[in-house]
Image (tube, rainbow, N blue to C red; front, side, top):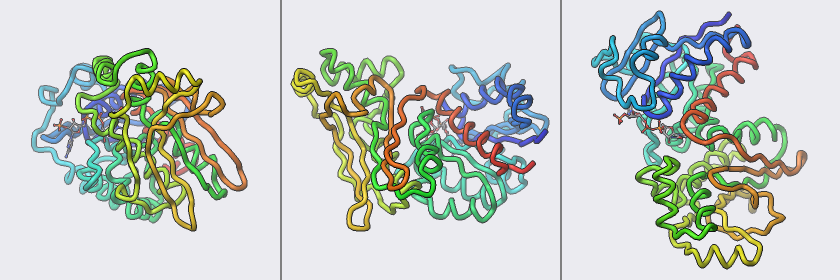
Length: 347
Ligand SMILES: NC(=O)c1ccc[n+]([C@@H]2O[C@H](COP(=O)([O-])OP(=O)(O)OC[C@H]3O[C@@H](n4cnc5c(N)ncnc54)[C@H](OP(=O)(O)O)[C@@H]3O)[C@@H](O)[C@H]2O)c1
């Protein structure tokens, strides 16, 4: 049985979901995979908890419920515990990084991932910022150290977009990536087809917990653009930045636009696309009207999908996967289980 001491940094929606999954699935993975993922450390911005014997039971009693927003009050909480000490003293073997995405600087995630990898600690993250800002550096560190850098959670969570692109298309030359990569906007567009105005559909998505209170990144197309750039980086080796992408969101669409397309047997989807042109990779994000024969036509509500086209392996389309913090946290843990099965985490 291989035991890995796990640390979580960023104890918000995904951090708490990951802690719960580590507790609920621990025995299943011990028996089924021969892998013991033992949560020993959780860190927020103002301190955290560390117990070399494992935190599972303490968190179960006091602090990994949906309603727990902070770690304060959990017995053993240490306001002086800092990330620097955890990695410098190598108190963990695997870091799950779930701090907020900053698409400009990539911080604090980039520092967390860099410092962990430098010290031989495996990492998996849901944070898109570091992958945009420092993919080349981080992937180099991981390769050099023979370490996991799991990023599947950053580009659609449960939708296995990275696995499909990197492993499904291994050895082929991918010329096109396109997808419906944002569940919130797809949900809003689906509700507008039911006759709701954009603002009402957005309010419904927020009330249902599908959209965040500040959903600007989603509805203006930036979340789709960021996910697309990550896929273009890792699958097409495209060195684009956000400034290179023409981004249009869904905020200007009216019920009339949606109704007109519906009457013509078409649907509007927010589509991110990256393609090769004259040796370079180009990318765009915009609402598009698609016909019923298009593979994205039946991707409704908060569902997502991705399609790859490559020279030797052809056309690959993947859709589905559950939405929300728990499936997203599970997708980071999927990267860990896959790495274990491939022998990357030792024996
Ligand atoms: N929600 C999803 O379904 C989903 C899906 C895929 C990927 N993601 C990505 O996964 C990440 C986490 O998402 P989330 O929904 O869990 O966000 P969240 O609920 O806002 O949680 C982020 C947590 O990180 C903490 N934090 C901020 N700076 C920190 C630091 N320097 N050190 C330690 N902790 C710090 C925050 O504490 P404070 O509250 O004190 O600032 C907060 O508790 C984001 O990058 C997001 O883009 C989310």
